[in-house]
Image (cartoon, rainbow, N blue to C red; front, top):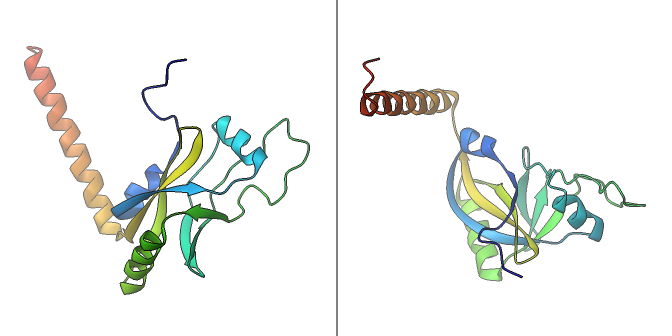
Length: 159
């Protein structure tokens, strides 16, 4: 059987890029229960509102919604329970140092499967102010408009 070219993405946290300035990121494994894996394979997870914290030398993921698998007979823990992330000790220490230094939080950005295992990409993030968000939206809209104008010009339209 041929291996797929790309890893299937289950969920993206697009809101994180709008709400935060994203910095350094890491790939981490997630400790899941059996029915949670089947729920992820159904592809209905949500990272919005999720965050991670360093507690007792371990990183825990909070607020990520993994729905219950429909054919499961039982499901313990709930869909938004905290889940342990798997990282190397040096990575955990580095993340903890940076979070404690100042004003950073750990935000999940992408949830996907890699070689049959569920992975989450976490990033260090700093909250944006309201005017930063408006500025980013205006800049993105201006870039879109210039791309449209260039595209129309290349197609020979005068609009």
